[in-house]
Image 1 (cartoon, rainbow, N blue to C red):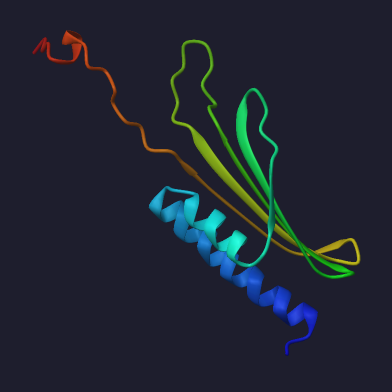
Image 2 (image 1 turned 180 degrees about the vertical axis):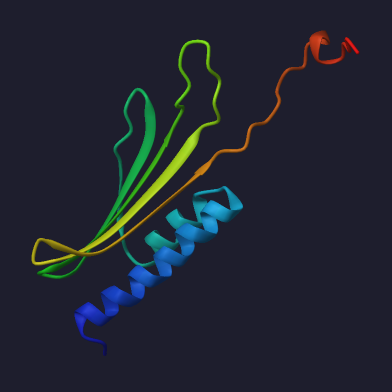
Length: 123
């Protein structure tokens, strides 16, 4: 059996890989699946402006891994921007962050305009 910190390092590395893969594929569900498979607890920490999930895992009394996912729309008045998904993964030992990883991606924009305006051409 691995010591708690080596076990935590392995979990951290798997989730870091999963986050990077999710950013390449532009879909966050693989990270959620992997965190839950390791026994993380999931909490919805969404606000009115962002969808957010937090995953926590206590490995030993002093070792803690936290994964935060947030998806939000940075658009403002007169600006239309794609949604943004952000991941933050941290590992703490005795309350001190010893490893951290962050990554993000712009969510793909899907055209949903089914009106006649999408069929008009002005060229």
